[in-house]
Length: 126
Image (cartoon, rainbow, N blue to C red):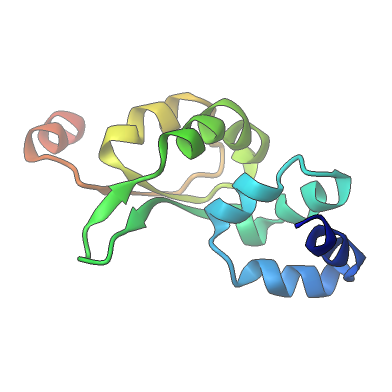
């Protein structure tokens, strides 16, 4: 793995961006934010931070929550460092409160909620 990381570091930014754009934004942010100064700058780009899909689509088509460890790191560290770039969030309903209360989102214009129960939707939207 160390040899692979060294090879990645040697690539120009343009090539790294092409590679990272083909990966899941959540994974890119989770794995590369605060890795080093260069990767930190790259992954703070709006390409990775404008629209966050904080859910997983399972093989049967249902939507599942993120892993607890990933979710916790996003709420405690990552979201507050990119909050000003986020324009759209896709969130699993049971994590909605954690995600929305961990920081402010001054440019948020859209929110998709997944696995939301009817009674919760009625309480929120009435």
